[in-house]
Length: 232
Image 1 (spheres, rainbow, N blue to C red):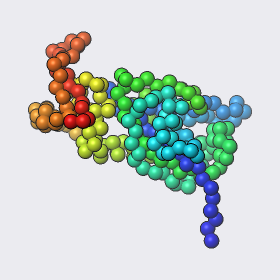
Image 2 (cartoon, rainbow, N blue to C red):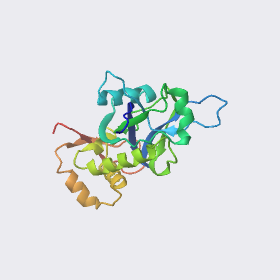
Image 3 (cartoon, rainbow, N blue to C red):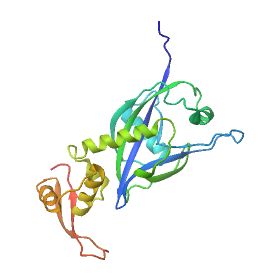
Image 4 (cartoon, rainbow, N blue to C red):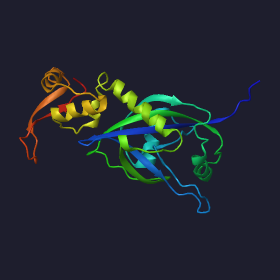
């Protein structure tokens, strides 16, 4: 007869941002462990255990704020990760033992991806995050636990839901150009769009609102600005 075991439930947040240089991912660096230990703290996604009295969405919002001081982030649940060995790698053991009351318990985590406009959100480290940073998606190395796998699946979920859920606008400034919108789609979906056809299709969308404003402070001919109205 199989032996049952208690487990921890956690949330991990994959927060994506976007600028002209591509997709960014929000990472935290773990605070140090006792100096007599040879293992070094690692970089990880913002995540922590769920409290007994909170729901999953509430936990994701709290954990993200506790570690990065970000509020009001668009968060969407995308997958659960339950490999029995996901937090048992030797690279993670020393740090877990320094911060967890029961470091050997199994942990199942619920993954959320978040989307922000980089110019509107400015993270700051808190709790067990020593520092926080935006990293280029294509240049991220080894993360703690199974967070590389969580990151990969989060980006795949973003790609799959980009068009059907109108979530691309969460990554753009409140006022954006059609060039910015097209560039974002091309980066996330990894394909090129014909400029004329893309703009023709966008202008058919009732939720994309043309503004009587143009870019300012640019060296090229200023482009018209648009905004997103989710109620249209």
